[in-house]
Length: 79
Image (tube, rainbow, N blue to C red; front, side, top):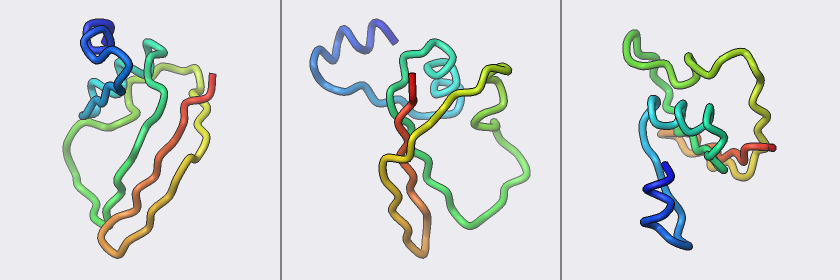
């Protein structure tokens, strides 16, 4: 994460995937989180919030976009 921020300079760093997001959240370096929720349930895959530990992470809703295909929710990580 430090290397990505250094390479980005003043620009934002975007991460994708459950493992990377969990790692960034646990390290305290994720400022915002966007979830794209679709109306289908899958029975396999990596759980997005499975390995965050026991300390709660407070989130603030920044934006919600609701469409027939998906609901897009952006959260700011409260510190």
